[in-house]
Image (cartoon, rainbow, N blue to C red):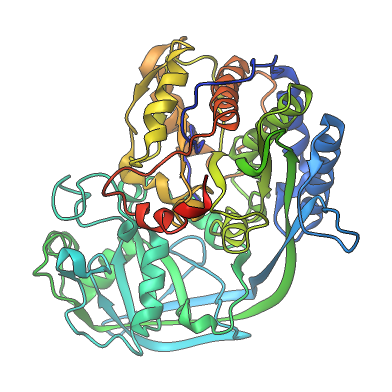
Length: 550
C-alpha cells in the first residue's frame, strides 16, 4: 500500500567482493512491463484470471533465464515455483447504503464520493448499522511509551470514531512522534487495529490530501473494491465491523451539526491533553451485503543457488499484484493496469534473475520473490515472513523493488524513511560508484517505510530497507523530478491511468538496476551480515538468532 512515483528497494550490508555487473537490457524490461500491464492481465488482482496469467508469465521468464524453482516443497522432494498464500477475500455485494443523521436531518452519502467503506472482514454476510453514535477521537492513538492516549478511558463499544490521518506531529513538524516523519501510529492500518482493540463499531479515517500523502481518488479506488486478509480464527480481534474513510468536508459537517469546530478540535488533538468528544445529535447508518470467500493466491519464488554457502540467501523482492478491475474513471476505464506500480518492479526482478542466472555463481544463494497482495496490506510478504520457506535467521537481507525510475538517469538516490542499518551507509558507497549522491527521504511524512514489502521482514529483525530513485534528474534536475512525482501521485497512483507508455526513458531503470545488482552481488559474495544499529527498534529481534549466523 505505499507509493510515490519513486518507491522502493530494500537493501542489505555492503561487502567487498562482487561479481562483474552484467549488461542489463532496458528494452527487455520495457517489454515485460508492457506485457504485465496490458489490459488482458486485468490489473493483476489476486485470485483472478489476471493472477493466473501473471504467475504463468513470471514462471516462464524465470525458467527461460535459468533461475531454479524455490517455492513450496513437493512430494518428490523438489520445489514448486510458487508458495501458496491462503487468503480471505471480501467484497461488497449490491448497493452500499450510507446515511448520517445531522441534528435531526438525514443525509444520504454515496459510496466512493463522500465515503469509502471497506467490505466488512469480520465474517458477516451483511453489515447493518442503524443510528450509531459518533465520537471524534483525535488521531486515534494509544502510545504508552510517549505518555499519549487519545481515548482517556472513553468506552467506544457501540460507537464509531472519527479519527485524523497521520500523526499528531504532522501539522507542526514537532512533538512526541518524531516530527514530520510518520510513525506507525500515523498509518491507517494502525488506526483500524486500534478500533478492534477498543471494541468500537468502527473507525472512519478523515481524508486530507497532505497528511494522507495522496488524493481522494487513491482512497476511493483502494477501498471500494475487493479486500483481502490473511485467514484468521477470530477476525473480530483484528477488525471492527466498519472500516472506512470519509471526505474532510463531510467530517466537518458532522462536527458542525454537533456544535463543534473541526480546526479547533484538530489543534487540541495535537496535544496529549486532548479528550474525545461525542457528537451529540449525530448518528451513522449503513447497510450492505458481503461476499466472503477463502482463496489461495501465489508468491512466485526462484533462486540462483550459492556455490559456497547456499543456505545463506539474499532476497530480491517485488509485488506482482495491482488493484484489478474496479470503479471507472472519467474516461470509463475500469482496469487498474499498475504499469509503474508495480509491473516495473516485477519486470526489474525478472531482469535481475536473468543477470544472476547467466553470470558466475554467487557464494550465497540469491532468491527472487514476487509476492502477491501487497496492495491489500502487504499480505504476500507478511505470509512469507510468517511462514518462511527458508530460515529468516540466515536470510542475509531483503532488497525490495516497488516502482522504478522511468524518467531517465538521476543524479541521486534516496531512502524511504530512516532505517538505522549499517547497510544504508554501504548502499550509499555502491551508488557513489555510479556518480549518484544520497538525498534523505523527501516525504517522510508519507510513512513509506511501513508501506512496502520489506516491512514484514524488517519487523521480524531481517535487515530490510527501502531505497528509491532520487528526484534530481539529469534532464531537468530536481524541479522536473519533483513535478513528475507529484503528477504521478495526483493523476495515476492507484488509478486506471497508471498505464504503459512506449516513450519511457529506460536509462534510469538500467542505472538503478546496476546499483541494485552490485549491492546484492557484493552481499552474496561476502561472509558479512548487515546489522541494525544500536537503539534500532528491530535490533533485539535479530539479536535473538545471532547464534545461527556464522
